[in-house]
Amino acid sequence: MLSEEARARGALLFAFGDYGGLDTDAMRTVAVPWKLTAAALVMAQAPEDVSQASLRRILTGYGFLYPTEIANWPEGAGAPPKPEAVLGVALGVGRRSLPPIELQIGNIGCAACHAAPTYGADGRPAPDRVWLGAPNPSLDLEAYTQGLYAALQGGVAEPERLMATVRRLYPDMTDREAKTLQSFVMPRVRERMTAIAATGQGVLPFSNGLPGMTNGVAALKLQHGLLADDPDAMTRETGFTSIPHLADRAWRSALLWDGAYAPPGHERFRVMQEADLTDAHRDQLAAITAYFTVPSMGVSGAQARRHVPEVETAWAYLQTVRPQPFPGRIDPARAVAGRDVFQRSCAACHGTYAETAQGPRLIRFPNWAGLVGTDRTRAEAITETLVARVNASPMGGSISAAATGLYAAPPLTGLWQSAPYLHNGSVPSLAALLGLEERPERFRVGGHAMDLERVAIAYPDGYQPYAGSVWVDTRKPGLGARGHETPFADLSREDRLALLEYLKRL
Image (cartoon, rainbow, N blue to C red; front, side, top):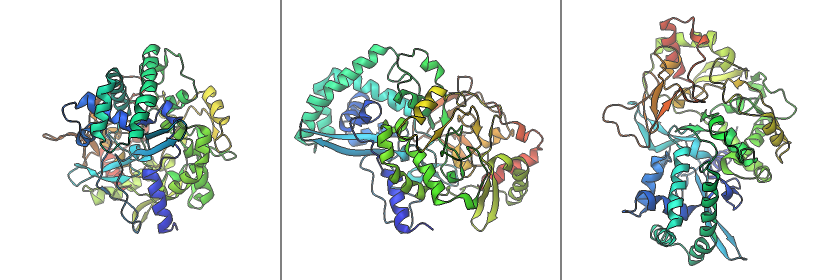
């Protein structure tokens, strides 16, 4: 049993930790000089209102969250600290004596992707009340990256105006930081903008995808220098993945959608029982997770290794995270029947759930991996060259990387909070996934509400999205919506309706 103190520390690290990502090395790819970039965004998108309120509106549009409450903050941990800027952006001040430098650095943290609005009984989201561990369905890293690039391009073209905007937005900024921005940061940003323009590839040689998605394999290839001067990267690197729910991830024997990362010396895909959920197993997964900061935060492999103990602490907390209880109505009779359907049609890949006083709980997880007819792009994205780089990295002693070419079936805990569905977020509802309705070629995502009856992304009449929304086109590379139909092929409509009700309980 995890102590209250340990849970509190783990929650703090998960929600607010920087894991070594606040340094100038990380600024080469992911981290940013926060005050300068914030001012550039406001100057570009809200020049008539230079204020923190404008910055908040801009970042909210990209799917970042400004919560007033963390609904599943550990009991006994005290009130969570208020984020200095926005949840999921870690901030810190770097200083040097020679040369005399002071700079606030910002970087993407765990909670940017893995904290989501809670939902009410009407399916409406509450973005000011979030749930840690749930996937952020509206975070649009691609739009954020492109918006930041355009803003900085415009800002460095008018340096005096940009610095004036910084001072208005941050009136308490020190003279030392102002001088750092003018004499140290601005010239480097200008050089970087010129270099990016010269490549002809845009700000990145790949797309990060759409709201609620990431392209972690391409980001890792970028960190290892495997996309340099590659004119085909933008069209080839489309291994988009939907951000997963983190509840019950300790049941995994290997991590990532394809099970590419496993603890050395262990079978990659093996059946897990409750007795296998040891502290040692959890810490092995935590060490692997520390390596995620390389593509997501731009840290070095050596830096990632130094912060393994912090990730272990965060993982101990994550092992206690449960999904938000389903807020809508569940048909009890159908849910009981659906449990039997699940056991017959789903458990062999997605695990066995037992009934407890707290609801269904995993008691066995097979860690099945294979191909089920879904889009193959992500399964084929990890190459032997990338595998060799990972295994030779400073984290190689903690990771056995492999190009599996498969998809690893995940636990379905928190499934209702995880729309859209499949590994690439290409199906907007559980009803469509189960074959109760057609899978659409196009649908909107981002800032959406939920249709709790169908467990679907929804935009009801008169609804105002809390974040930007875009259209998902499943005909585009990496976004195919076919596959995973066989498990439901022999089910009657009533069986599928019953299964839908049961899945709401997980």
